[in-house]
Image 1 (cartoon, rainbow, N blue to C red):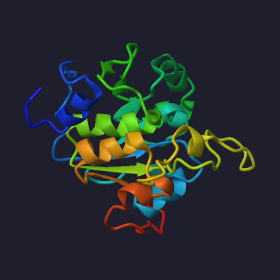
Image 2: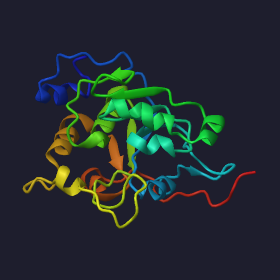
Image 3: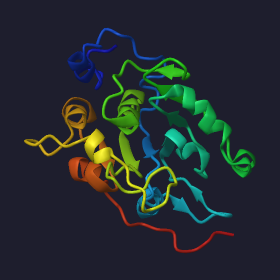
Length: 225
């Protein structure tokens, strides 16, 4: 691992800085990454970031950006997906197998699977702390992306996973804020040691912690032929 790799300080604090990064590390420099999680707000987040394209029946894409999905978001993401991530790699194959058939015809298959555990194509020496979304953002840094935008990752107790709006999640307890810093301790470490201002969020607590990307609010108002 190069001395100046942005994950080095983060991995050192984890005690994992001697573990090798996968060969894919650093190969996406010069591009942006949109990480799509499965909170109900993901579609609004994507539209406000200008990644909802009114082409055909509609798709998710934005010039200069690749797409990464987290956990089951791969099932319903109408996009050419570059990366999929989960802290539970045994579930990735199930999520991928459940991807809508129409997407298999319209879009390329997802290219790279990632996790901090064996079972994915690329295994990263991360601890898996602070939810799969945090690990996905760290993988984005490891891949070399210049800008990373989180969509559908508010880390609040609102609806996720396509569940009904009245069913609550436990993210505010599972990834609780530190009383003194008002940010989850694992996200604070990543923000301080790895993100370098390159990770932004469109919603929720992660937006409060990381800030919004520039140029939000852009939407395509007309359908293309």
